[in-house]
Image 1: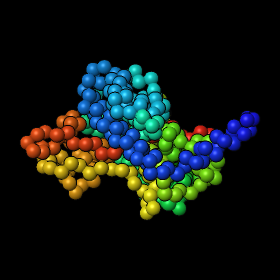
Image 2: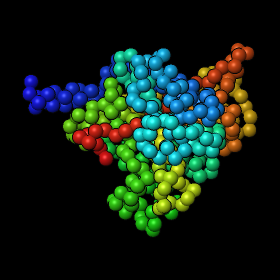
Image 3: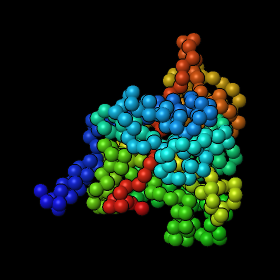
Length: 346
């Protein structure tokens, strides 16, 4: 084979992987399940991470990946404080301090080599500051808009544009983009100073699956059932960014979920809580058999509902049959990078 035919084969195989079959979807669900448990593990050791470093977070997740899967699907990003503003912080050797946010971007790779890709941003102390919560809510709302745009027949770029519009609106409302209109900001791309990356990529055997596909089959293509992708907006204010007020500097937030395109929309594979009585206290969200998210899921995704919680919420419990049982963390999903330049949609 010549170099030209090698490249032709690489592109062909990459495009074959765009739509996943039932086996592949099942493996990706397994990867997400294990990743959820790895995130639960990390939440439970945050006090120990404070006494050591980001390495404790990385190592805790790695244990879950090696026990339940083949490995991590990519280098774990365990970024605390200002490190969260570096997209691919993989040194993971910094301090984990109360009052800071921890951005964890990690995924378990199954023994069949399919990987999840999940990101969550957590307050180390268990409580967001008002500004941290404001930034977090903006990213959460952008992700909700992005996920809502994932459906068969939609352009691949649609979910990115939907999420970016929300982030641009928030940046404007905070006075960071001057007196321009939203359309002017989007046309000039001014918001990208703080959004930094595309809102998602395809997922499968590679964390950036199908990266060799032609633009018309990927970035300029149309979604169809069986496509699996990430939705992962973020906002990042560098510690030395003099264009924003000082209180913003050093805050980095990203939220990422893995999304399957279905016949009638999408599936983020979010699991309900286990049935059973739940702990109740002021500010503690309810969670029962008819809800769609666990206590910890609600805490991480909807911090406004838990404005006054402390570290005790990091270890949610349900009493079932007289035993304390750890509630499952709902399917968390992360971001890591963008597709390769060949298929880069943004």
